[in-house]
Image: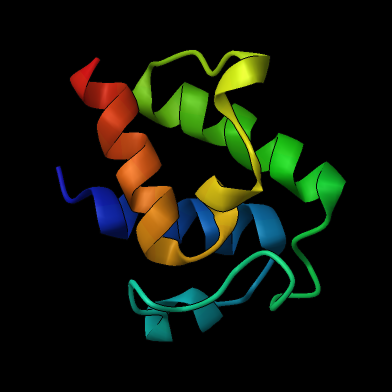
Length: 83
């Protein structure tokens, strides 16, 4: 499974980016840089990641740093899958 591709697909779907995520790199800024990524979208992203990857995210596990860039979000997912 290519986690980066899956994360980008989730971002595109949840944020209705209409394919914009295909140009994102691991360094692409998310939180504060993409207007569609507001607090409600963060909740929707977490829910979608839980469903797609089969893990549970506890409230105390998540903070803004996980959503800083595509790379930090991919790292977060990889960490959850490794646990």
